[in-house]
Image (spheres, rainbow, N blue to C red):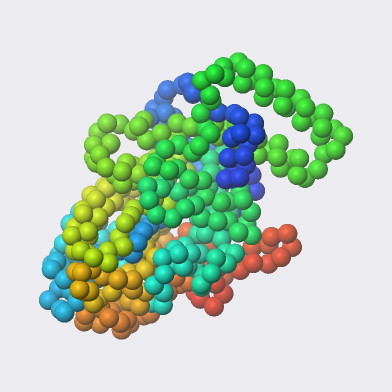
Length: 439
């Protein structure tokens, strides 16, 4: 099978970090967004116009990653690898998808119609049943029994795929529930995740009502004069970095509309649905259209130790339609070819059904879904046995998935980061990508 080599995007050394974003926009300098300062116009998302830099970043084909993290551990048997009619299969049927011969759970009828744009890895064996460890390992690609110092996938993507001059954060978490923002570790705080709790714009990005725009501008002018005077006498790399972060923060504040999903058309808001996950999927589309390199959307809680089947009816019923709508929109808007989509959890759930009609933690044989940029569509990687208790073919783990995601967006996952003269492998050097899944 031939592979297409995609040149890796250059990293951005001038992106707003989570620390500088919150620090410089929060209590230290008290700046807020320029409400009303940005005029209306036709934008990529049907709201306000994207800035020229963002529009150019999208137009030039920067690669992006969207992770949908199903916190708590979604059951592979009720989603991507059903086993109806077996002692572990549960009550749900397997239904055909848009890929001939491929079936998924009947709880995902809308997603079934999108499977020709997606692929399933059915042979994960991550040997882990702990929530915290599972989240760390799936999002860092490394074995992390304790909170070791490896960067989150979002930080790696922000470092390697953010276009030059891009002023929005490169790593955004849209959180309703589940885990927090991903650490950047040795990559530095500028690549750590910026959190949008409940899909709201990041904290401290609105100018206080008591502060007029004129007063805000005067403060900024005074700050600039003081900085210039200081730099003329004791300029250092640290002062240059602070000044640069401040200017980037000001630029970000003028683009606060990017984070406002209410600016999307009412028709689109209705299409995605009134519940939280639907709104967050629409927000993810908006962020991706504005060129944000990495977006993670959390959906929880799949930790179904009791009444697994009732909970999955509810949870997957909430997931299915918005996710399928997002896949359709990414395709029709020309974004999917440059956006890698991954649906993952920290682990799967036990084939054995416990005495509370639940399934427990299970990292031995479970599934992850990938699609979009650099991924072969409609593929099935690996196989579990008849009742899903073991991997029979093509066993892989979190390290292989991590390599695959990066390689698919054009990053040499076998390379190294040079941080202050020290070399750090981009991904686990003991692992490699799932080559047959790459285009």
